[in-house]
Length: 125
Image 1 (cartoon, rainbow, N blue to C red):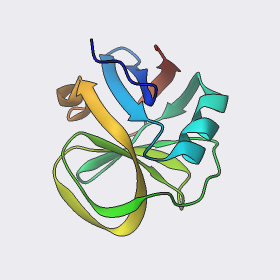
Image 2: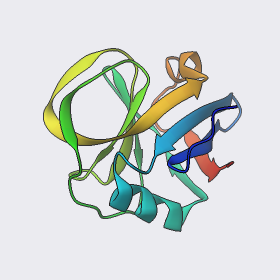
Image 3: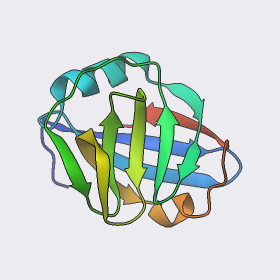
């Protein structure tokens, strides 16, 4: 198993559907990930929007290592919406997001999400 000090793994449980495992990396957005860890575990409602799913979270953080292009399965933070965003396909966006990490397993589960399903996010490593 490849272990790095920077890597943190999370379980995103979609209530009644299954689990998604994600890795987020401290070196990509250290302040944002620190703030996310302070509210873990948390529950929220998922918002489906075009080629992404958005999980609002009670975290205020500025922009870190922002990008406008993301690959399928990448995870970012939206400072404007105070939300974690998972991209379901390669995307170019008009807003700038801070990159956090990537989905390891369960991305196909996110493709069948409907608006306002409940999710629980918790750290597993």
